[in-house]
Image 1 (cartoon, rainbow, N blue to C red):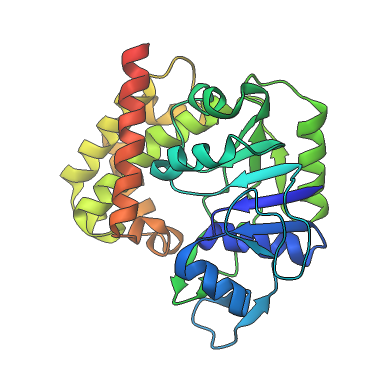
Image 2 (image 1 turned 120 degrees about the vertical axis):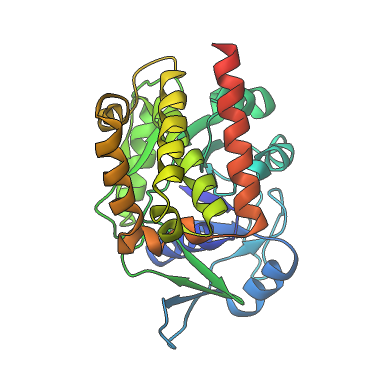
Length: 302
C-alpha cells in the first residue's frame, strides 16, 4: 500500500516516521520552513528532554500531486492519504485533495460528520479515524520531541471506521496494514459517533484549560470545572444517539459533585499535565473554536 501523510506537525511526523521505519511506502506532505527542514534533515525525533536526535529519511512532497521526490521516486498516486491536521485546516486540505486518487483517512478532531468531507472529495473515498489521546509532543525547532508512550506504542488503539459503520474489505485491509507496521489500530463501527462524543468532551475541556492557563490551574477552580462539566453534559445530550464509548454516559448520569471531584483529579494527573491541554498557542485555540462551532451546528440540525 502506498501512503501519503498530509500534515507534518508532531502527529503527522511521528506517524510517517513509524510507517517508513516499518518498510511502508509512505511520503510526508509539508510546506514552507517545515518542508525545507525535512528535505535537509528528514524527520528528526527525540524523546522528551533527551539530547539524542535520530533522523528518519521519509520522502517529502510539497503538493499531493507532486510527481517525484528528490530521489526520483514516483509520488503522484497513492492508495491512501492520511490527513493529520487541526480541524480548522481541513477545508484548505479538501481543496488540494479533489484531484487526487485513492481513499482518504481523516485522523483528527472532527464533529461535523462525513458529509462535508464526502461532498468535497467524493463520499466513496472518505474514512474516519482518530489518533489516540496519548499521541503528542512538541516541535522544538525542527525536532519532534515526543513522550516514550506515544501513540505508536500505546495500548490505546487508533480507531478507524467507515462513515456508515460497515465492515468493508478496504477497512480491514487498512487496519491490517497499520498493525503490520506496529501501529495499534482497530476497526470502529461507530466512528462518527465516537468523534462526536470525543468533541463533546474535548471542546469544553480544552477551552476551559486554555482560559485557565493550563489543566492544573483549571483543577484549582472548582467553579470553572463545574461549568465545563455542564457544557459537556449539554453537548452529549444534543447528540443524535448514545455516546461512544459508552463510558462517557457517566458524565450524564453520575452526581455533579462526584464528577467535579473526579475531573479535578484527572486534570492534575501527569498524563494530562503533559498533554496538549497545556498548549496555549493560537492554533490550539482556533481548533477548539472550530470544534465548538461544529457541535453547535450539529445541534441546530437535530
